[in-house]
Image (cartoon, rainbow, N blue to C red; front, side, top):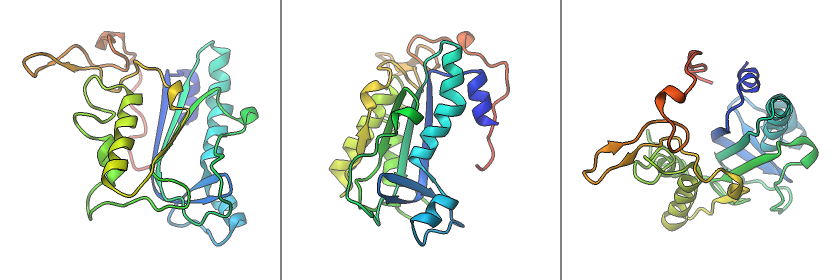
Length: 216
């Protein structure tokens, strides 16, 4: 249903954030739900999605229909998950060009073979905290999505023993903001809220109610 919605009204950027259990096997980094069977690679493929599966779904159900509408969509995955139990030491994580969106980026909160830190009890992970930083994170006023991700990764490298990996981030639109408000000289918010610098509230299509507010 969500993919159908995106196909009908393709946005400029689709951002997917996943935090939780994960495991890397060869070139696939799997997103593992609590009930998944993960005793071997075959079981993982039967019960879990990999980051490559997600890109293939986005290509098939969103990117291809969007091209028919002459719309280019950028797909960004942020995976704040473990990548331990590597069956093969490799850094080749790019999706197959024949089954992937034209414009894609991905950010892993840790390097291959490593565990992603959970953070303190009842708190966000270090990566999530960095992404949500009110001054430099992805929702900070006037900070582009690309810059917010780069800021978060730099913070992680400087503060804990994780080494985030970013692929294709240079393809993200430079001026795409999740919060386009900026501070004026008096420290007050000025401008307008939107998805790109200069977007005004009445430019946004709010004709349909927000979807998927429940627990995924």
